[in-house]
Image (cartoon, rainbow over all chains, first blue to last red):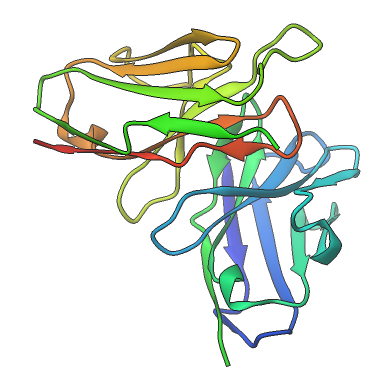
Length: 115
Length: 112
């Protein structure tokens, strides 16, 4: 059974770094790509970036300078790190398996950027 | 970036009726490999998005045949026939032909 679960802090201070972990089961991160998508409260979806099954990455150009996606294949985990957070980075961060498209999603983690 | 324009923003429907959502892209979504990477998602209230249709017209596993996707180039449509209560929510199109991948702004399907 494919599962993805995000974990991370619910509250981050402005200018600090966000670290979110996506723990997957039911598939290997070396066999399928994994992507991150975020959603501000009450708004639409934004693609953040992806880590391909071979380990390379692609990022949304709007976020690229602040973003890093990596993984630990031994733990089947994917990591999102975003620095210099601002209040408009507040939202739910989802990880999703890339098969036909984003075919399986985690439940998301709601992150608030506030002092 | 490719801009994805979804219409309408809000779509009131009656149960048992039909709904149609349009998604237009600012440039062709035909990839150099010949595939068109346009997908549709439904996000029910309080839930994560779920995949309905991938690559224009392919229903994902378990998606009822009441959902159908069509289109080509820059113009795509999602049709829902015989709308049921569990179909209500926000619908999004996504293009993954060009980086950065971009979503439409969303269409809220609600009861009339």
